[in-house]
Amino acid sequence: MIRLLGCGAPTRQFALCEHHKFKLHFRWVAHTEALDRPSNDPCRRSPPFVKSHVSACATSRKLPQLGFLLAQRRPAPLSLYARARTPRSWLSQCISYAMDVDEEHNEEFGVLLKQGAEARVFESIFVGQKCIVKERFSKKYRHPVLDSKLTTKRLNAEARCMTKARRLGVPTPVLYAVDPLLHTLTFEYVNGPSVKEILLDFGLNGLVHERLDDIATQIGNAIGKLHDGGLIHGDLTTSNMIVKSGTNQLVLIDFGLSFNSTLPEDKAVDLYVLERALLSMHSSCGNVMDKILSAYRKASKQWSSTMNKLAQVRQRGRKRTMVG
Image 1 (cartoon, rainbow, N blue to C red):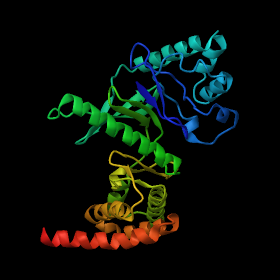
Image 2: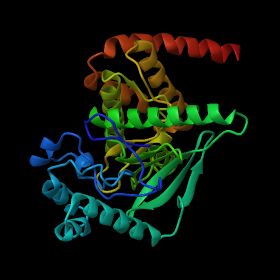
Image 3: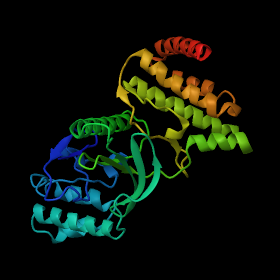
Protein backbone atom coordinates (compact mmCIF):
# COMPACT_ATOMS: atom_id res chain seq x y z
CA MET A 1 0.00 0.00 0.00
CA ILE A 2 1.02 3.62 -0.47
CA ARG A 3 -0.36 6.49 1.54
CA LEU A 4 -1.21 9.79 -0.04
CA LEU A 5 -1.35 12.69 2.36
CA GLY A 6 -4.05 14.99 0.99
CA CYS A 7 -3.99 18.72 1.62
CA GLY A 8 -6.32 19.24 4.57
CA ALA A 9 -8.01 15.93 3.88
CA PRO A 10 -8.01 12.54 5.58
CA THR A 11 -5.27 10.14 4.58
CA ARG A 12 -6.33 7.85 1.74
CA GLN A 13 -4.94 4.41 0.93
CA PHE A 14 -4.90 2.82 -2.51
CA ALA A 15 -3.87 -0.60 -3.76
CA LEU A 16 -0.74 -0.71 -5.87
CA CYS A 17 -0.85 -1.38 -9.59
CA GLU A 18 1.57 -4.19 -10.53
CA HIS A 19 4.64 -2.34 -9.25
CA HIS A 20 5.12 -0.06 -6.26
CA LYS A 21 7.14 2.54 -8.20
CA PHE A 22 4.39 3.58 -10.61
CA LYS A 23 3.97 7.34 -10.52
CA LEU A 24 0.95 9.41 -11.32
CA HIS A 25 1.34 13.13 -12.01
CA PHE A 26 -1.52 14.62 -10.04
CA ARG A 27 -2.53 15.39 -6.48
CA TRP A 28 -5.62 13.61 -5.27
CA VAL A 29 -7.83 16.08 -3.44
CA ALA A 30 -10.18 14.17 -1.16
CA HIS A 31 -12.69 17.00 -0.95
CA THR A 32 -13.51 17.36 -4.64
CA GLU A 33 -15.67 20.44 -4.10
CA ALA A 34 -12.45 22.31 -3.25
CA LEU A 35 -11.47 21.98 -6.91
CA ASP A 36 -14.21 24.42 -7.86
CA ARG A 37 -12.57 27.23 -5.91
CA PRO A 38 -9.30 28.96 -6.80
CA SER A 39 -6.65 28.45 -4.15
CA ASN A 40 -3.39 30.10 -3.18
CA ASP A 41 -2.41 27.07 -1.13
CA PRO A 42 1.01 25.87 -2.40
CA CYS A 43 0.11 22.33 -1.32
CA ARG A 44 -2.78 22.24 -3.73
CA ARG A 45 -0.78 23.78 -6.56
CA SER A 46 2.28 21.63 -5.96
CA PRO A 47 3.43 18.91 -8.36
CA PRO A 48 1.52 15.96 -6.95
CA PHE A 49 2.46 12.36 -6.52
CA VAL A 50 0.38 9.23 -6.10
CA LYS A 51 1.34 5.59 -6.45
CA SER A 52 -2.03 3.96 -6.77
CA HIS A 53 -4.27 1.68 -8.74
CA VAL A 54 -5.09 3.36 -12.05
CA SER A 55 -8.81 3.20 -11.28
CA ALA A 56 -8.43 5.09 -8.00
CA CYS A 57 -9.89 8.23 -9.55
CA ALA A 58 -12.42 6.51 -11.79
CA THR A 59 -15.21 7.67 -9.46
CA SER A 60 -14.09 11.30 -9.64
CA ARG A 61 -16.48 13.56 -11.56
CA LYS A 62 -14.07 16.49 -11.46
CA LEU A 63 -11.59 15.47 -14.14
CA PRO A 64 -11.74 18.80 -16.05
CA GLN A 65 -10.88 20.73 -12.88
CA LEU A 66 -8.26 18.16 -11.97
CA GLY A 67 -6.73 18.54 -15.42
CA PHE A 68 -6.68 22.31 -14.94
CA LEU A 69 -4.73 21.92 -11.70
CA LEU A 70 -2.25 19.72 -13.51
CA ALA A 71 -1.84 22.25 -16.28
CA GLN A 72 -0.68 24.85 -13.78
CA ARG A 73 2.58 22.95 -13.57
CA ARG A 74 2.87 20.90 -16.75
CA PRO A 75 0.57 20.87 -19.81
CA ALA A 76 1.18 17.26 -20.86
CA PRO A 77 -1.41 15.65 -18.51
CA LEU A 78 -4.09 18.01 -19.82
CA SER A 79 -3.30 17.18 -23.44
CA LEU A 80 -3.41 13.49 -22.50
CA TYR A 81 -6.80 14.08 -20.91
CA ALA A 82 -8.08 15.71 -24.11
CA ARG A 83 -7.21 12.57 -26.08
CA ALA A 84 -8.29 10.01 -23.48
CA ARG A 85 -11.68 8.29 -23.72
CA THR A 86 -11.99 7.06 -20.13
CA PRO A 87 -10.56 8.06 -16.74
CA ARG A 88 -8.69 4.75 -16.62
CA SER A 89 -6.94 5.37 -19.93
CA TRP A 90 -6.04 8.94 -18.93
CA LEU A 91 -4.51 7.80 -15.65
CA SER A 92 -2.63 5.02 -17.43
CA GLN A 93 -1.14 7.52 -19.88
CA CYS A 94 -0.22 9.88 -17.04
CA ILE A 95 1.66 7.05 -15.33
CA SER A 96 3.55 6.25 -18.53
CA TYR A 97 4.35 9.93 -19.03
CA ALA A 98 5.67 10.34 -15.49
CA MET A 99 7.80 7.20 -15.71
CA ASP A 100 9.28 8.35 -19.04
CA VAL A 101 10.28 11.68 -17.51
CA ASP A 102 11.99 10.05 -14.55
CA GLU A 103 13.73 7.43 -16.69
CA GLU A 104 15.57 10.23 -18.49
CA HIS A 105 17.61 10.71 -15.32
CA ASN A 106 18.14 6.98 -14.76
CA GLU A 107 18.81 7.23 -11.01
CA GLU A 108 17.33 5.32 -8.08
CA PHE A 109 17.40 8.07 -5.47
CA GLY A 110 19.96 10.51 -6.87
CA VAL A 111 22.93 12.20 -5.22
CA LEU A 112 23.57 11.51 -1.56
CA LEU A 113 23.60 14.79 0.38
CA LYS A 114 23.78 13.65 3.98
CA GLN A 115 23.56 10.55 6.14
CA GLY A 116 22.57 10.45 9.79
CA ALA A 117 21.93 7.74 12.34
CA GLU A 118 18.39 7.11 11.10
CA ALA A 119 18.20 8.18 7.47
CA ARG A 120 19.93 9.13 4.25
CA VAL A 121 18.99 12.28 2.33
CA PHE A 122 19.27 12.38 -1.46
CA GLU A 123 18.85 15.07 -4.06
CA SER A 124 16.80 13.49 -6.81
CA ILE A 125 14.36 14.14 -9.66
CA PHE A 126 10.62 13.72 -9.35
CA VAL A 127 8.59 14.00 -12.54
CA GLY A 128 11.24 16.19 -14.10
CA GLN A 129 11.67 18.48 -11.09
CA LYS A 130 14.34 18.60 -8.43
CA CYS A 131 13.26 17.05 -5.14
CA ILE A 132 14.57 15.59 -1.89
CA VAL A 133 14.22 11.90 -1.02
CA LYS A 134 14.68 10.89 2.61
CA GLU A 135 15.26 7.17 3.07
CA ARG A 136 14.98 5.54 6.47
CA PHE A 137 17.31 2.57 6.21
CA SER A 138 16.95 -0.70 8.12
CA LYS A 139 19.00 -1.52 11.21
CA LYS A 140 20.72 -4.88 10.91
CA TYR A 141 20.83 -5.45 14.68
CA ARG A 142 17.02 -5.48 14.88
CA HIS A 143 14.75 -8.37 14.01
CA PRO A 144 13.55 -7.82 10.40
CA VAL A 145 9.83 -7.82 11.29
CA LEU A 146 10.32 -5.44 14.22
CA ASP A 147 12.63 -3.25 12.16
CA SER A 148 10.07 -2.94 9.36
CA LYS A 149 7.27 -2.03 11.78
CA LEU A 150 9.35 0.56 13.63
CA THR A 151 10.67 2.13 10.45
CA THR A 152 7.21 2.37 8.88
CA LYS A 153 5.73 3.79 12.09
CA ARG A 154 8.37 6.50 12.31
CA LEU A 155 8.08 7.24 8.60
CA ASN A 156 4.33 7.79 8.89
CA ALA A 157 4.73 9.84 12.06
CA GLU A 158 7.21 12.17 10.36
CA ALA A 159 4.92 12.59 7.35
CA ARG A 160 1.92 13.39 9.57
CA CYS A 161 3.86 15.92 11.64
CA MET A 162 5.25 17.57 8.51
CA THR A 163 1.76 17.86 7.04
CA LYS A 164 0.28 19.12 10.31
CA ALA A 165 2.96 21.81 10.58
CA ARG A 166 2.04 23.06 7.12
CA ARG A 167 -1.64 23.17 8.05
CA LEU A 168 -0.70 25.25 11.10
CA GLY A 169 0.84 27.84 8.79
CA VAL A 170 4.48 26.92 9.36
CA PRO A 171 6.53 26.95 6.13
CA THR A 172 7.76 23.42 5.41
CA PRO A 173 8.73 21.60 2.21
CA VAL A 174 5.71 20.30 0.28
CA LEU A 175 5.37 16.58 0.88
CA TYR A 176 4.93 14.70 -2.40
CA ALA A 177 4.86 11.05 -1.34
CA VAL A 178 5.23 8.49 1.41
CA ASP A 179 6.48 5.07 0.31
CA PRO A 180 6.26 2.48 3.13
CA LEU A 181 7.83 -0.19 0.92
CA LEU A 182 11.05 1.69 0.24
CA HIS A 183 10.69 3.64 3.51
CA THR A 184 11.11 6.98 1.76
CA LEU A 185 9.62 10.45 1.91
CA THR A 186 9.70 12.54 -1.25
CA PHE A 187 9.30 16.28 -0.82
CA GLU A 188 10.04 19.67 -2.30
CA TYR A 189 13.62 20.82 -2.83
CA VAL A 190 14.13 24.11 -0.99
CA ASN A 191 16.94 26.16 -2.49
CA GLY A 192 18.82 28.28 0.02
CA PRO A 193 21.36 28.27 2.85
CA SER A 194 20.65 26.89 6.30
CA VAL A 195 20.39 29.25 9.25
CA LYS A 196 23.53 27.59 10.58
CA GLU A 197 25.50 28.68 7.51
CA ILE A 198 24.10 32.21 7.72
CA LEU A 199 24.95 32.61 11.40
CA LEU A 200 28.43 31.16 10.96
CA ASP A 201 28.96 33.64 8.16
CA PHE A 202 27.85 36.37 10.55
CA GLY A 203 30.55 35.31 12.99
CA LEU A 204 33.24 35.40 10.30
CA ASN A 205 32.32 38.27 8.00
CA GLY A 206 29.54 40.12 9.73
CA LEU A 207 25.88 40.19 8.72
CA VAL A 208 23.34 42.94 8.32
CA HIS A 209 21.60 43.16 11.69
CA GLU A 210 18.23 43.73 10.02
CA ARG A 211 18.50 40.33 8.35
CA LEU A 212 19.51 38.68 11.61
CA ASP A 213 16.50 40.24 13.33
CA ASP A 214 14.21 39.07 10.51
CA ILE A 215 15.48 35.48 10.76
CA ALA A 216 15.09 35.46 14.55
CA THR A 217 11.54 36.80 14.24
CA GLN A 218 10.59 34.15 11.68
CA ILE A 219 12.03 31.41 13.91
CA GLY A 220 10.02 32.61 16.91
CA ASN A 221 6.82 32.90 14.87
CA ALA A 222 7.22 29.41 13.41
CA ILE A 223 7.86 27.78 16.79
CA GLY A 224 4.94 29.66 18.33
CA LYS A 225 2.56 28.34 15.66
CA LEU A 226 3.87 24.80 16.11
CA HIS A 227 3.47 24.83 19.89
CA ASP A 228 0.02 26.43 19.86
CA GLY A 229 -1.02 23.69 17.44
CA GLY A 230 0.19 21.00 19.83
CA LEU A 231 3.22 19.99 17.76
CA ILE A 232 6.76 19.62 19.12
CA HIS A 233 9.56 19.70 16.55
CA GLY A 234 12.00 17.72 18.69
CA ASP A 235 15.18 18.77 16.90
CA LEU A 236 15.20 22.56 16.70
CA THR A 237 18.72 23.28 15.52
CA THR A 238 19.93 25.86 13.03
CA SER A 239 20.79 23.02 10.63
CA ASN A 240 17.08 22.21 10.35
CA MET A 241 16.10 25.68 9.21
CA ILE A 242 16.56 26.89 5.63
CA VAL A 243 16.18 30.43 4.34
CA LYS A 244 14.71 30.36 0.83
CA SER A 245 16.80 32.13 -1.76
CA GLY A 246 15.03 35.14 -3.24
CA THR A 247 12.20 35.36 -0.70
CA ASN A 248 14.21 35.04 2.56
CA GLN A 249 11.37 32.91 3.93
CA LEU A 250 12.32 30.56 6.75
CA VAL A 251 11.48 26.89 6.13
CA LEU A 252 11.57 24.23 8.86
CA ILE A 253 12.79 20.77 7.87
CA ASP A 254 13.45 17.35 9.44
CA PHE A 255 10.41 16.36 11.50
CA GLY A 256 11.88 12.93 12.25
CA LEU A 257 11.74 13.49 16.02
CA SER A 258 8.48 15.45 16.08
CA PHE A 259 5.48 14.45 18.17
CA ASN A 260 2.16 15.81 19.37
CA SER A 261 2.02 17.35 22.83
CA THR A 262 0.37 20.27 24.61
CA LEU A 263 2.51 20.04 27.76
CA PRO A 264 4.48 23.20 28.64
CA GLU A 265 7.36 20.93 29.65
CA ASP A 266 7.73 19.53 26.13
CA LYS A 267 7.49 22.99 24.59
CA ALA A 268 10.12 24.31 27.00
CA VAL A 269 12.51 21.46 26.19
CA ASP A 270 11.99 22.20 22.49
CA LEU A 271 13.07 25.80 23.06
CA TYR A 272 15.95 24.73 25.31
CA VAL A 273 17.37 22.49 22.58
CA LEU A 274 17.44 25.50 20.26
CA GLU A 275 19.00 27.69 22.94
CA ARG A 276 21.81 25.19 23.56
CA ALA A 277 22.43 24.89 19.81
CA LEU A 278 22.74 28.67 19.51
CA LEU A 279 25.07 28.95 22.51
CA SER A 280 27.35 26.16 21.34
CA MET A 281 27.56 27.09 17.65
CA HIS A 282 26.69 30.78 17.37
CA SER A 283 27.80 32.53 20.55
CA SER A 284 29.34 35.33 18.46
CA CYS A 285 25.92 36.33 17.11
CA GLY A 286 24.84 37.98 20.34
CA ASN A 287 21.36 37.74 21.84
CA VAL A 288 19.67 35.85 19.00
CA MET A 289 17.74 33.67 21.44
CA ASP A 290 16.28 36.73 23.17
CA LYS A 291 14.95 37.96 19.83
CA ILE A 292 13.52 34.52 19.07
CA LEU A 293 11.76 34.37 22.45
CA SER A 294 10.41 37.88 21.96
CA ALA A 295 8.82 36.82 18.66
CA TYR A 296 7.65 33.57 20.29
CA ARG A 297 5.74 35.53 22.96
CA LYS A 298 3.94 37.51 20.29
CA ALA A 299 3.10 34.45 18.18
CA SER A 300 2.04 32.06 20.96
CA LYS A 301 -1.08 32.46 23.07
CA GLN A 302 0.27 30.00 25.64
CA TRP A 303 3.71 31.51 26.04
CA SER A 304 3.47 32.25 29.77
CA SER A 305 3.35 28.65 31.02
CA THR A 306 6.01 27.65 28.49
CA MET A 307 8.41 30.38 29.62
CA ASN A 308 7.94 29.42 33.27
CA LYS A 309 8.83 25.83 32.41
CA LEU A 310 11.78 26.99 30.32
CA ALA A 311 13.28 28.63 33.41
CA GLN A 312 13.00 25.30 35.26
CA VAL A 313 14.50 23.37 32.35
CA ARG A 314 17.43 25.79 32.27
CA GLN A 315 18.07 25.16 35.96
CA ARG A 316 18.09 21.42 35.41
CA GLY A 317 20.46 21.87 32.49
CA ARG A 318 22.88 23.92 34.58
CA LYS A 319 22.91 21.32 37.35
CA ARG A 320 23.62 18.58 34.83
CA THR A 321 26.49 20.63 33.39
CA MET A 322 27.98 21.21 36.86
CA VAL A 323 27.76 17.53 37.83
CA GLY A 324 29.00 16.39 34.43
